[in-house]
Amino acid sequence: MLRPLLPLVAALLALAGAAGPVHAARSLQLGFYDGTYLLEAPKRGPWFQDTVDVGSDIVRIEIGWPVLNTPKRPPGLDARDPADSHYDFSRADASIKDAHARGLRVLASFQGAPRWAEGANRPASASPGTWRPDPAAVHDYGVALARRYSGSFPDPARPGRSLPRVKAFQVWNEPNLADYLNPQWSGRREASPQIYRRMLTAFYNGVKSRRRDALVVTAGTGPFGDPQPGGRRMMPARFVRELLCLRRGRGRALLRLRCPAPARFDVLSHHPYTAGAPSRAALNADDVAVVDLGKLKRLLRAAERSGRALPRKRHRLWVTEFAYDSSPPDPDGVPLARQARFLQESFYLLWRQGVDTIMWFLVRDTLPRPSFAVTRQSGVFFRDGRRKPAATAFRFPLVAQRAGRNAVRVWGRSPLAGTVTIERRSGSRWRAAKALRVRRRGVFTARIPAGAARSFRARVGAERSLVWLLR
Image (tube, rainbow, N blue to C red; front, side):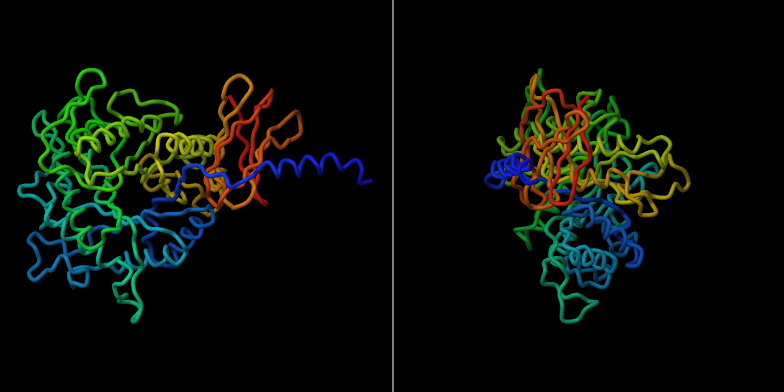
């Protein structure tokens, strides 16, 4: 009875042996941005558990600017001292500790200035907290954050213990939109990039004065803007050009503007929401969807070469918010299977353009209150905790693309360390096509003969990816 099995055993051994050394492609860190991380412990616990279960590395926690919000600066406030009584970090502390206890890295972000830290004469059209935030106040808050989350600051809730160390801090959200930063324009001239450059550099200097190792991440820019100056949205590529003291010349040429105080940061972030499939480019030249990240990368590398992105080093690219709504539950979302496919394809396209960290917006769907139109159902879990196909796609993403007439290029990220076996379907049977040794949550790539196969999947240990169907 053993003899008929010998060829199969020999083939499997040969395939395993062919895996060779550990496959090492450029890494990709995945995580979530979700406001539920700030809920009280009994409510946020299930969300954090879901976050861990699907193989996350990092979470973005919006901690705000938790200082007394009065028209005038509070008397006696020492804004650089995180123990000052005018601050209330209790919610942020609890959420960051919970994330740290579960092995998650934290990006601590904030937006919205207290009234005393805004510019004078805020018009009624500008939302509170958005009007010309004071760079000096932003600097001092950066000092306070770096000190509080240094890993050695005493935990007020646990005497004798310290608060966790936070590696990355993000200043503001979507500064090319008037919902978050004002004014966007001064007549027909850009105003928000200059305002934000001063805020960003001040925050960088504040954080780095206490923590040279901490990462300072720019606010993720919104993906779309208005085609004409003077609107409420500035196109993201235009915003980033001005932020980095560049200007578009003829063709693809970039002009260098006078820049006495260049922007200082470690990571450039963007939010590449896309109208349609991830491979669909934005209609306007200065808008940036998933497949357009190269526009921002080109600006960033040009600014690095000319000293307009400091410090002089290679800056990283992150996506700190991005998603697709699903149907169900949102009747205007994409079908569940398509959401999972779009998630995987987006991860691959962003990684290919140099992004090394991506944060999906929402672990679980929100309730449609007051309506689906103004809420998000982009979770990889339904509100009641049931998994969508996107949860499997997040944990074990896999993409296959044609590479010539008879070959396919496969990309994925393994949830486990071990041997990933890439399989193709031949008729009604799945056959192993390639085996690769990988690290836990390591990215793998492979070129395999496809023949007539159109369906591909991957296995590692007891885990299996979704099936990727070539189109």
